Image (cartoon, rainbow, N blue to C red; front, side, top):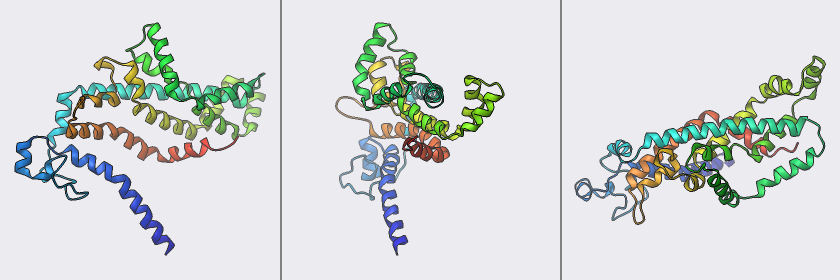
Length: 284
């Protein structure tokens, strides 16, 4: 009886979480043309006169041309490329810098190591919005606003990634490093030949977190980018909205296209995603 009750509760939660996605899909194939709504019925309207949770979820006639119209209305392919390029660059940067810092904080011995790590970790308590304006002023002063540099470089350093990888590195057996030292290996060679090959799951988990966070970031690009040629998808979606209204079918179609890479990465990397959550809570 307890098992059946658990399945019922989980099924209810699953429906609750899937309904917004189904609404996005249904809205993306609807229309805003009053003449078509009059012919096809109220289900083709984004806001039907008689709303229903299920009744008008999907229209009677599906307007798949909305997905093609997305590419005609805005440079969607360019926005997609920008998001992909920036997300991959930030992900690679965070994995490299975090793994190097984590190796130093977990394996190397130097004066003030633990104190320095404490203050570095304390930056996690500072909201990103607090440093946004100083970062903007700095980038503006050196003429790097409206560049890929402004989107990538300030984001490639992360205290969370360093903390997570440090916890993992502390769990690696020290006997491997001692054997490598006896064979004449230095810290750099140990880092590349022993630590990194054994840290695949942790690096993959950090990469997933980094990619997802960068892909959906809106506030940073909103402040740093003005040119359409550099807009990522999160900022480009605002082109379907104005001060008084929004083209909901096209906006939902563009939103569904924009989350496809995220869904793909999560489905194929969910075990690393769960591992990252577990690693983040392990005390070294």
